[in-house]
Structure formats: C-alpha cells, structure tokens
Length: 441
Image (cartoon, rainbow, N blue to C red; front, side):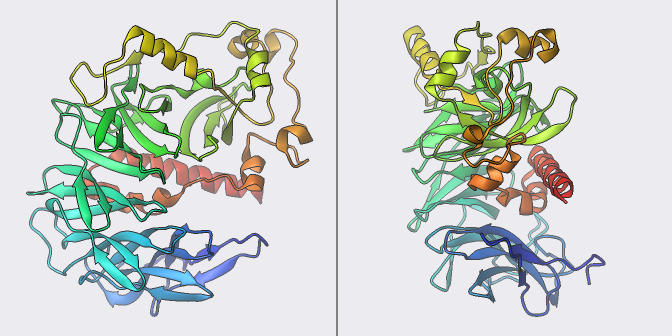
C-alpha cells in the first residue's frame, strides 16, 4: 500500500537476538520510537484504513502502539483517526500526539492535533494553548510532559509543560515563539525561544518558572537547546537561524554557553561538530570530524583530575567570546566576579576515549608537526579490554544514552511547526546512523 519495502520495528536486547515487533492489525509498516528499562517499546504503525491526513504520510491511518511481552497493542486515539507515540518512561507512561477529530482546520489543513499521556489503558488529552496543533517532544520519569502548542489563530507557538493535569505556557525570551525540546528528570526544560523582534532565537533553560537565555556562540546569531541532564548541563545546536552550521554549545546551571570544543582536552585531532545527548554522568554522544574530513560517532567523557593536570602543563587557547542578547531576560546579570567563577567551573573538561592529551602545538598544527605522543587505546582507557575507535565501541559496550527519539518522527512533525533546521538535523543523524551500520557489516 505504500509502494515501499515492508519494514518492521525491532528490539535488540542484551542477548543481541533481534526481535521483530510486528505491526498493528492490517499494517505493513512500523517504527519504534522509544523503549524503557522494563523491556516495553512504543512507536507507530500503519493499518489498512484509508486516511488522507496520516500523521506520517501513510495512505492509511497512523496508529500508536505499545509492545510488551511479545504482543503489540494499538493505543487508540483522542477521537480522530491517527495517533503517534513518541516516548515511554520507566513507569510505563506513554506520551505522543493524536488527532481529536477527522475534520481539517482551515489554519493548518489537518484535523486538530493534541498531545496525550497514556497511562493504565487510558489516553489523556493534555489540552491546548488556544490553537489546533500541539506536538509532544519529551516525557520524563516523573510523568512530566513537554512539547510545543500553537496559540489561538495557529500563527504563533509556545513551549508547554504538562504535569498532573496542569498545563503551563513556558513563554518566550521576549519574542513571538518558543519550542520545548527536552526535560530532565530533575525538571529542567530546554529548547529555544525568540528574542525581542523575533529575528533570532536563543537556547533556553526553564527551571522553577524562570526561562534563562543561554545565549549563542559568537558570531552565530541563533541557538537551540536539544538535551539536558539532571545536573543542569545543557547541549545546544548553534548557527544561522533555521539553518544551523555553528559549533555545538555547552552550558551549565543556566550560564552562557560556550563552544564545546573549547572544553575538549587537546590531542584527539577531532573537531566536535554535533552533539545529541548528555546523560547524568556528563557523558556526551555526538559526531566529530577527523583531520581528513571524515565524520565519526564519538563520546565525550568528563576528564579526570590527572588528565586535566597533564593538559594544564601546556598553554590553553582562549575560549570563543560569548554573545548574549542585549535585551532584558529573566536570568540575572553577570558581574565580572560572577563570570570569573563561571570560567573557573569550566575546569571540568572532556576527553575522547582512546586519546590522550598532547601538546597544544600538536592540537593546532597536527601530529606531524612534532613527535606524535598520542597513545593508542588500551584496556584501561576502555574499561573493557576492547580497543576504542572514536568512541563507537565505547558507546555500544557501555550502553551510554543515545537518544534517537526525534530521529524517528521529527521529519514528519517539523514541517507543521516550521523548524526546517531540526528536520535537517534529523536527516543528517539518520544518514550518520545508517552509514555507521553499513560500516559495521
């Protein structure tokens, strides 16, 4: 029915025996979007009922599903023909979005779409901020849900927080729009919001009712926060507005972001070009460019005191200047002493497993400029005995969190919310993942 090869969602458990999760009755396609520590998997699938408004472009209805104990369950909808499950937490709660009816709205061209929380067999409508389109983006282990909803008229959109029946508009940084992308188990929400004039947007951290502007990495004009952990550390994408292309940003405790490459110990020969996720140990998954231009998956690990001390024996290049919006925001103004303290906290630096600190001269001019003192990976580096290649094996062996939730569905969501740079990010990540899989065969 789709003119494509049939594809099913799968689960790859610890015993490395791939399990075909199947699809809902009448379906031929399914895609897993999230799983939890209880072995439950959620996603979406097609059925055989024609639908002109499929959430993901099928010629038939899109159905949210839960897989557990070998069986697929259709989760139903909020009253319309389609639903899509994005996340499942360790409590078994599921979040996503669903049509509430079958009639297209004049403003969006599709039926009204609301975020939902599914719990104990019941799908709960999370409501609206006045518009007819809402998208859920993250669910944490406390049952808190975040995402983005259109306002009345479907012209502007704001990030939202839903918790125990209460819906909160996160507001903006003074402009028209905002989007919430992620929420940690500690309750920190990150995303992006327009600054006054709405000609650019900045990454934000929303905590306890206050939205803090995380700034940008100079000279790029825009930034978008994409992940955060429970320690207040935030990863951001930066670059030209709605295009990207800037260096990955890193922020801690609501302070202005810096180029994450300024925090990486010298000696790896790699330039971090993209970050995707950070766990509560501070380990970061991403992509980095080799000197020859190849791009590999990497993991950045907080450096030990010994590694930092070894790197401190060499001069350290100054961090890129930080650009902050000159307009008022809810974060407090930084004093010179406060900025000095912030710089001091950035003594926590990162290393890439399998590489050790070399001199600053080497990091700037390449290993051929003087004797190459970068050592080969060892069992001590990996913690396992297997060599580490750009962090790929380390990620696989240590099960570091690597969130691909957005990869599975944002290409379908973003056109509705006008975020083409996120669509490009998803496509690039999907291509990188496919390339890595091909190289492993």
